Structure formats: structure tokens, C-alpha cells
Image 1: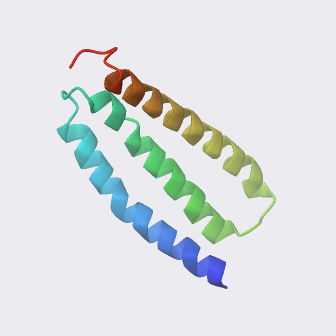
Image 2: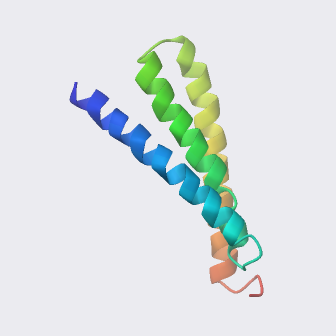
Length: 95
């Protein structure tokens, strides 16, 4: 019961963050840290999909494969974003 309430809050927060991620990615696309912000939109959307799917499907066995694929893609995108941030912070990419 409490886990379901937290999952609903997670869906609401991610739903509110998605438009903010779109605005940040579009607004700063020409900035030096635009490459870091670009993957935040699909990352947020994928985690929103995961949270909403768990809320709607519960522990359905059919959702397990979708959860694995979506989670893996989100993890790859997070790794890419961190790599871009590290390149920017270490000075390997010019400002």
C-alpha cells in the first residue's frame, strides 16, 4: 500500500520533470553543457514509463521484459550523459 503511494508520487514528480527537461535541453542546446542535457529528456521519459508501467501492471510477468529493456536503455543513456559531463568538467572538450 505504501509502496503504491510512493510509486504514484514518483510518476507525478517525473511527469512534472519531463517538460522541464525538454525546456532545459532545447534552451541550452548550443551551450557547452548542451550535450550533457540532451539525454535527460529520454532518460526522464524512460523512467516515467517504468514507474507508470509498474503502477499499472503491478508485478505482471509480461512487463518484466519491457522493464529490462527500458531500464537498460535508460542506464546506457545515463552513462552517456555522465561521460559527456566528465569530458566537459575535465576540460577535454573546449568551452
